[in-house]
Image (tube, rainbow, N blue to C red; front, side):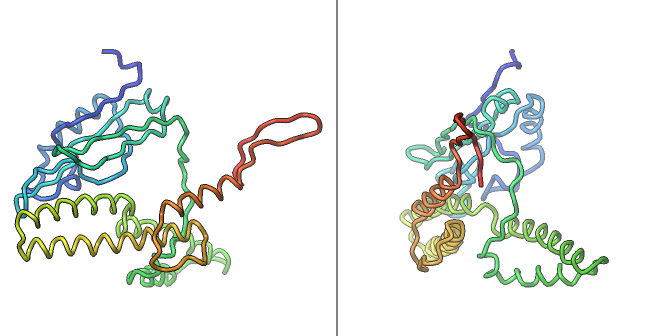
Length: 267
């Protein structure tokens, strides 16, 4: 077997790697995931990042018997990632199968490794936000007034990043997962129109509405549109607007004397 060439390995592995990749059914045991994890390590594979629902398989049953898992995934070896470093797997909608189809997009663009800290306005609306800021700001720090403020700002940045990850997670992935769950909940309600199933669907819809509001605020902030009205949701438009702003801040060519050249500069 030639391991010195790019590998792309994907499909239904019929197992998971941790308990977060399963919803419903019996608890996950260590014996379930050990062999798969060791195999990935032995083959020196890394998983390609994904977008879409966290789960790729549903057993087709309802209520307590319903189980969701992430059984399908795509890996690459070091040579693959050296050649196509910014590849991505999209989890598409399940249709006619209990597994979601996977759409792999191979991209040669190098991904930005260090992302700058960005304060997200929707954080301030969460009940825990003020307490986190107060706790960090009340910590004792030695030094000059400027050094104290700088140190506290760094600590606050770290704490807010960790808190946002644990509280909100990836909002786009959360939305895709909730939409996936709602489709299943609607099927369950049609098959068994009980009050319990109705309440489950209502709860999922309420959670989706909350995340859609967060997504709306994220794009509003990113687009920098102060005139945007609450309740208007068109994230495709916002995304296009942001990309348009980036193009305006991009220098494609420069002229120096009689010569002409090209440059990739982001302002």
